[in-house]
Length: 577
Image (tube, rainbow, N blue to C red; front, side, top):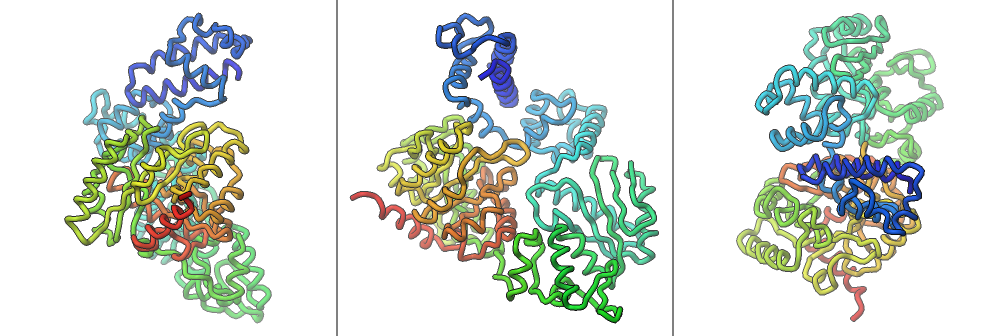
């Protein structure tokens, strides 16, 4: 590994340490400069001869990282720090003029964990409550956010939903807009969204109504004025496409603006084969007569198709399936009976077990599973055996005191680089179920990582494979792994695979859900909750499940508690006597 690459890792660690307020951040920053100054030096040879100890500015901690990098090509410290850092803080690091020290102050002082939360705080005056933050700093931050958006960087789905809600509120204030709805990638529930499509039902001529938006105070740039499709760049950097239509043509316009290009083209071909054609947003028959389309289901019926839900309109075979008959009932939030991937104060969660149980009961769930980190993850407060004993005693007491919801005993055990699950078999046996996840050594090559995960699935106590590719949307690519081999093994071994619904993960990627189903894999939709509020992530997981065509029968936590426990026992039956 070259000195420049090593220096980059040390500098990234310094930034992460600074985000956490660690005093050793400066030492890593200095070590990065020291290593960067060794360009042309054979680092492995230098390390082999003990020369790293003689490099000025390279203290014990940074030197251990350098040795780790040279030996494995990866840094366990960096991996751990990235895992324990709220993902939204990485996005904030991209904003001009906002360094890790200020981001830490925002996070600790106001609980801000995303660009969207920062923008809201800058607009509503909350920033002024922090030392060295005032109106001028708020304006500077808002300008930085606008510049960042102008780069075309997409945002996570829940943040896009919040932006869309504000945009819809803005356009609905117009006196000539009778209705406005979101379309495009947002309505298809894409994991990330870069631009926003809004369909407007206009009381006056659509082109005139849209033209009036181009002169608004918020608008910095407008393209297409005088037409029924106008693209606006707003003062906050957001790009919005306004599709104007009439009430009679709304269903067709909404459909056209929702599906991707290939889906729309496929349906148009089906319409043409049945003597139908679209003229703008109006459907006509072979004689040119208008055919009323009161809703999207009618349009699909005109094409000889069953209704295709918006999340599926991605041209991945859904049109052919709709031609064969009604599509299977899609997954609904109400189909989930509980959640299994939840962290409490016993590791890095911000809520206590009783609070999670109360929140689960309020959602109508029948159970909630507590799956705190295992001992090999000390940075996330991983539990030792004594902590496990105390946690299980607490869970037993809670279960004895209430009948409306059941608390299950789980753990998120690290899958170690050798493929072994953290904890011995006797300890693993004390849990109702075990989630196994990779939290370190992301730099393994595909063969190594695949072997690591396949070996973990040989362990009979492994119930669920957690966030199977380790990706963090917009900040970290998936690690190299043969996912088809992993899903095939999971199906054969009876291991469930997680669809981690944390908006930064969405892992398993919905595009692999059909493959998982073909291999007979049960999917666990997980909030990966670190507080009561993040139990809401399951709704995003259901959206991803819908995109992947999941049915309730495909989902582990659509079973009741006894069904989940039976699934785990079936795995343990493979254990040697």
